[in-house]
Length: 477
Image (cartoon, rainbow, N blue to C red; front, top):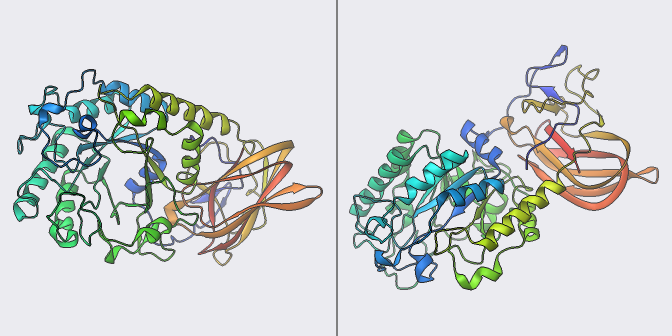
């Protein structure tokens, strides 16, 4: 969803109107520039495509013949244009899944698209289509490889790193590298017919691997169960925690570690590192295309609900949209995505706060003479703030007439850290304030659906915060 406008008392980082205002100190941890850019993307697409698409499996065994991979109408421009129209800002491609089949002509294996009837370099095609349509490109390279006899030995780690070098040198820039905990240790994964178990915490030697990748792509975001760039949200249902802190303490976490789902979903208020949650979910029951699931594609309303529990809870949504055997996004998926986009556009079309009057109970410094001025330039470096010793406060927005209110959108100025612990929303009705919502964290974005109410003013009350609250946007729909 495109942010339409800021509509509250607001301050620039360094000044407020004519009065110089000292900005607050950061509350650690804070996001990197790459993480800030990732937050702003809000919606990215996952694309699962490999031999599984043709064998009707979710996890291949690695013994598939490359000859089964034969898309007859493959068109990556159709994929990327469809995803762009749906509002996605980036695409992450499964360049290699657990079966080990590579979608590019890797020089290090014969289990590759180069030995299939198709033969084309699909990684290159997706990368070029992303550039053509203005989307960022990311890669998934499964650490687990059921095709390799040397998996579990030091030789395989060298193989894995060599393939990373191929991908990053040939198909970049890459905004996100995605790797999961499949067969990562602790019995967390493994799957049928897999007898090779490894201790994921030590076998993969992730620090050395990630340092190698950073040398090739300094601003890449790393996704895994525990980051270090962004973390798994702890489920594949499309749901971030009602309470969702962008920080965790990752010292005891690693890809594939069991029993960490609850922590990943909520984060930790006092976590030491900024590692926000990414919400991965598929538009279909499975991650790969299966014809039997053509009638089970999520509806526009289901996708809207997922948007509310992902982007609407301060996370970034990663929605999987798998191409079919033709090499096209199926018509049912295309229609669902269009319907979803239309629903989002209609719901968030008119920001009632855009031309409303905003006042606040408390202001930073001596800026109250200017602090009620509406911000109309969309400057992300503006926010309402209180003095350092004030951790609560209210912002009241008064409309020009009575409106039916359904949604509230709030954003924090996360460049200086995540702060708000609890807040409420009230609407003026029958000459009194009526509470219509209460929630915990805000972070990059919090969207609250409220029971529709007719009102000419609403009030946001910050009831607890780690430090003085910094609110960069309040929108009303």
